[in-house]
Amino acid sequence: MTGMKAAGAVTLGEVTYGYSYNRPVIEGVNLSIAAGSFVGILGPSGSGKTTLLKVIAGLVKPWHGSVDLERGRKIGYVPQVESVDWNFPVTVKEVVSMGVWNSSGRGPWIGSAAGEAIMRVLESLGIGDYASRQISELSGGEQQRVFLARAMIRSPDVLVLDEPTSGVDHATREAILGVLGELNQKGVTVILTTHDISGVARRLPWVVCMNRRIISQGRPADILTNENLLATYGLVVDTEGGR
Ligand SMILES: Nc1ncnc2c1ncn2[C@@H]1O[C@H](COP(=O)(O)OP(=O)(O)OP(=O)(O)O)[C@@H](O)[C@H]1O
Image 1 (cartoon, protein in one colour):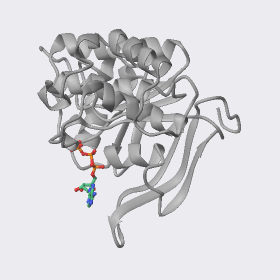
Image 2 (cartoon, helix red, strand yellow):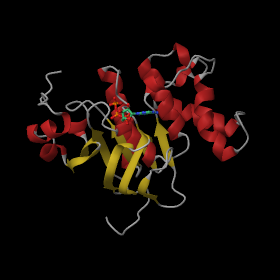
Image 3 (spheres, helix red, strand yellow):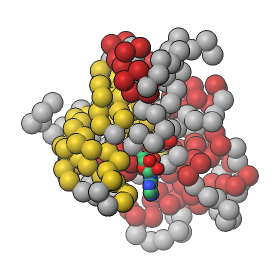
Image 4 (spheres, rainbow, N blue to C red):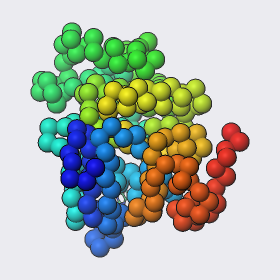
């Protein structure tokens, strides 16, 4: 896809970023993600996956290198649930409405059209009944779906998700993967990180292994080999699952 900028394509060139002077946590990252891709990013803890997603989503600016997304395309970012502190009172509907503040430019008042759109998204994720509940009362898997709803309400061209299936049960994982698969079928580029090799990564069309740098990428059957996993994680992982 080089040289071609289809909707929702993301291209990183020689991207380096870190949090303290002279200590990059991702370095020289070159990555081309074609529009309409469904990509899983794998790597051990601390390998820079979240950082890479933040660079892609434009939340941080790389020290060096380029991040290209076609002008006017929208990126939705779904953070890791554990990274968010919901100790203040806010309902599910209010959290999702944050996704439309930017476009309405009017603050947290939900018009009836936006309200209906929010309910449609919540229902598509099976959490319509929770609209008026406090977010702090929900389980991790339910909160995960609320964040997904907040990103989906903006109809993004690219959806970037940080470990969307971590800490959820089997049924929730399948529900989340199902929703992401449907969005991808509609043309949304989906980029997620995961630690779940057999339950998630093996089922995606394309995976990228990273550890500060990109180590390998390709179809899971070609990439999730013991040799590559050893290079990425420093150990051989039981990829056959047995879950
Ligand atoms: N806000 C921050 N300030 C300082 N250092 C940070 C910050 N965020 C991440 N780091 C450091 O950058 C490195 C990469 O972190 P990152 O969260 O990108 O890794 P990760 O691959 O997503 O890890 P995990 O799988 O555990 O979520 C780690 O060493 C981490 O400690």
